[in-house]
Image (cartoon, rainbow, N blue to C red; front, side):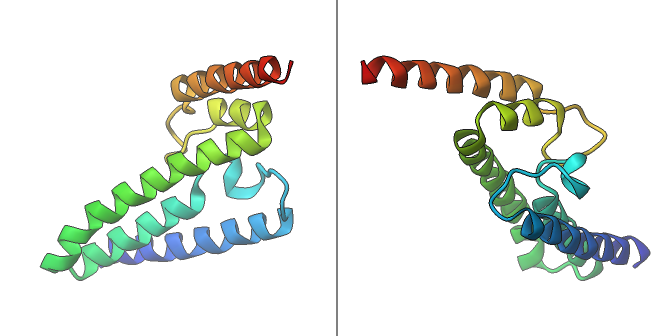
Length: 132
């Protein structure tokens, strides 16, 4: 019970703080608050809440849906990373290289960010040559 309540309360707090940071930033790229430690604190918080409820009230549907939801949030985070790289370019890719997606004690997504940076530079180069 303590573990599930902790996961739920921490998840709710993290989603509230993450939302407030994004709201204050408006359309600008932000690395403040929980975004200083992970790229996707709101998805992490939703995963935490889902797991917390699953620990507290495990049922067959929730046991089945939890991994599905986790996979969907991870896929959504990857798509969001691609969109942010397109919008904010190298500043986002540098941030992604040093900041982990979900778990703050892991290293940033250096390999995927380096590959994304190379792809972004290549696409920018290709776009420049197409315009000529």
